[in-house]
Image (tube, rainbow, N blue to C red):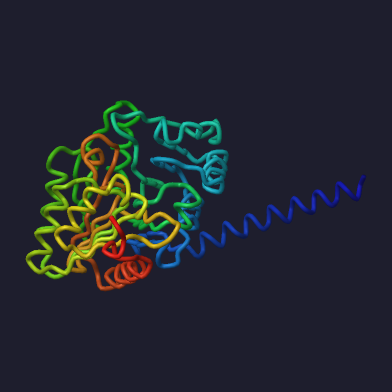
Length: 344
């Protein structure tokens, strides 16, 4: 009996030690946004494990963690949030009441849980740590989305942005209708234009305005695209000689996005499907290799009028950021097949 107890204690110690070592390794290796490196890029296409970065961000918290998410099923992320709440960190999780209906069973009583049931869906993917830095992008907190699907996430060390988003998310706790809004920030001499949706007609007009700015190249990777007004702007860009390439998730392309696929195809716009079993889940646009648009919003009517959604614009990418995005697009199109070879 004594030997069994000793073995149990030793095994428990080893598991704990390995778990702690793994956590410390994640914190050490993950390049989280800092005051010295305030804007970071992460993508599964470029070989990064998004889950590692989110776990490191959660582990780095000293005071508070606020997460708004469409759905969350990854056990490591859930356990990490529960552990931090147990340690006294103020943890709040806001999630869609339908897509994550069972999440409250898995989050501990120490976590503040807010079920959202807006007119549309709660679709944002925003993590705020210590009211200092933010991770935001296209990935849900599921193992598939974090590790296997095509997603793009950005990190911003900006107490001003973190406080503004915290205030917006705080309003979601009190009201069923989400508070829209737009605010521009400067982060290390680089500007970011953040849109918290729904924000009226100005938000879709901003997307169309950005497409009109394109002079040389336009790259779009979209999970779901149903807005014909956005498609018309892309066609105009193609017709004026802009090098346009569009990739849409194949599953969506044969479903919700079919009409837009047909319209773009009729206009001869270079058009691609992802060629694989995993979802192409990004909602990303690059303009002339200088402007980046990313966020949780698919190009649908609901995303801009009914959902808790968001997008943000980085209007002047640095050379290092451009290099990252070039790699991103190379991987996207390397794994894609022309729609014109398909029978739509």
